[in-house]
Length: 266
Image (cartoon, rainbow, N blue to C red; front, side, top):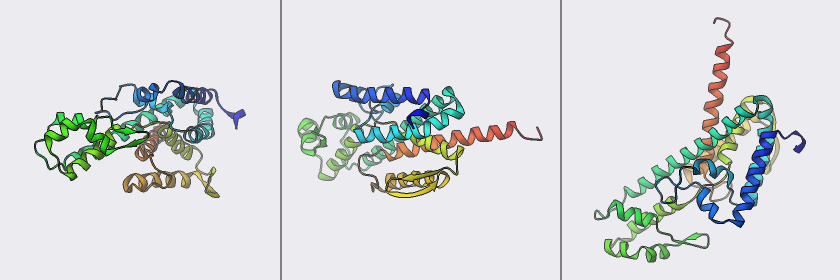
C-alpha cells in the first residue's frame, strides 16, 4: 500500500501526522485550529480548513489516514494532484459548513424553548461561552458557578437551565479530523470504481463499493438524526454526511459535464 501512495496523499499524511504530534507539545493549537461553532467566542475564520489536520486520538488519525492512503491514492492516480486537492478540500470545508449549519439549527431550536422572557441575547452569549469543562466533561455545577451572577439575576427554572446547558455544550464542542474529506473520497471512489470490493472490519465479507459507501453514509445519517451512536460517541455525524453530500454533488456534476462534452449530437 505504501509503495502505491501518491505524492499529494503522502504530503497530506505527513502534515496530518505532524499536526497530531505537535498538538501534544503545543496544546493551545487544539483551541486555535479545531473547528468551533461560528457564533462562539472560540471561532476563527481559518478553522474550516485547519480542523481537517487535527485529530482527537491515535485511532482517529489512524483510520482517517488509512482511508486517505487507500482511496485517495487511487483517485489522485486518475485525476492528478490539483484536481484531487480541489476535491479533497471542497469536501472538507463543505462538511464543516454543513456541520455548522446543523449546529445552528439545533442550538437555536433549543433556545426557542426558553420560558424566561427576561433573558437577553447578551445573557445567552455569556452563558453559552462560559468555561464549564472539568477534565474532559462538561459540568452543570461548574457552569452555574462560573456564570453565577447571570443565573442569579435571571432566577431560571430547572428546564431553562437544562436548555442552556445543552446549548452551551453544542456551542463549545469542537470538531476535528479529516473525516468529512474522507467521506467525500469514499463517494468519489464508489463513482469511479463501483464494483471494487471493500470490507468493514466487523463484517469480513467483501461488498462492492457502490453498495458499501451508501450504507456507511446512511448509518452516519441514522446516528446523526437519532443520536444513537453505532460507532461510538463524540462523532460529528453530520460532518461525515456533509462531506459525502459535497462529494456526491461534485462527482455528479463532473460526470454529467463529461457526458455532455462527449454527446454524439453536439
